[in-house]
Image (cartoon, rainbow, N blue to C red; front, side, top):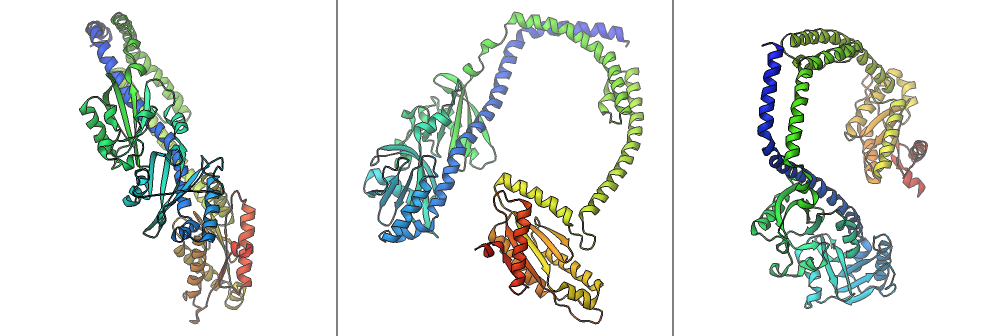
Length: 569
């Protein structure tokens, strides 16, 4: 069929379709947009709220764990009557207080029930001991319930009747092995937390947080919060039953919470009815604190149907679209393929690839023309790519030679310098540390002088193999020059650096693989100096400290490892 009759037939079909589509378009389009947009928005909003919630809490959790793990507190919790241990423990608690967000802490000891507290105003400085916990008192049941549960971390909203304050409490058990000695932690101001995290001020969006039983822990309406959930029976808790009017909605939210526990999904969304209005509920799990976040979005507020145009506008848009589609058809069949062909020619001239989509444009003669040009362009570009690949291969081989020691096949000084600079930048970003081990072969000149340079080269190769077999897969070794090797240990801490350096010394000294042609075994040993990077320490300083540690190892009689920390101390 020629182009002209096809054009007229296509016009007739478009007019008929546009007439039928008018009435149906409004409702179907509106429903589809609301559901798809709302679900995507819900997932993004929930994940955003999750990150905002965890950020202030996780920092306090980390500090609370450090406080609970303090050796001063453990010793004191075992001997609470010891005055010296009490003094050290209170000094430790005060040092942590200044680092907590609210500059407050609490410590409760299981052995004698003593409860210690101080706040940002240092109101209880010198009198941190506030009261004695009593397992028979209902107000103190939270402490003994948490001890019985044995959970290392618990977060709850609870009023302290003795102190007259209500906070978001972060409770961490004080343990010595498997024995529970007490509890330590801090509290966040409830009103401030709600204002900063929950009350973001987005119209139509309500965020709340619940525990595993559905008890409401955080809500902008404080009257809905289930204070002291840990000490209540489930029947007395203020749960999500207060929010959802229909039993099916409550079951759906509880089912979503259970599905999130296995962490196979990040967000679950459900349509629910709240206060007689349709809402989209997004639920996510915060395993770090054992809570669930529920974000309720009022669809009538976020995306009201009044925003959509009426039926007459749909008809007008449909008729206008008919004429646009007619023009689009003409462009698609003739003008667009020719324009794409012209652009493809420019790309081939510039050495760029041509997409396979070009061969699918147009129909009839136009399509055959496109396909023929596509085959020709691929043939030209394939030849060009082969040439560029060979050039790239030679370039990479040359770059490898410039950064690799040909004898040991380890990095050379240039390659190692670039690697250390890269890892230093990463360590600064991630607030981590790297370590350097500087290794020097003991009496290497004597080996060369006595047995010749060929044996000396064998010794260096053997050492390179020993280093490679001793290091972890992510550590990097280099021949720094002559008989010196430099090793990058990352990530690293002082213990890891010492262990690797000591193990490397032992392995080299125990090796008996270097044998002369006469069968004489040459004993090798090495002196190793180690240095762990400090915050924002430059490369020159790293190398200087590692070199000083190496000289200390030599001064100690060689065949040993010394660290810069031992020198500094």
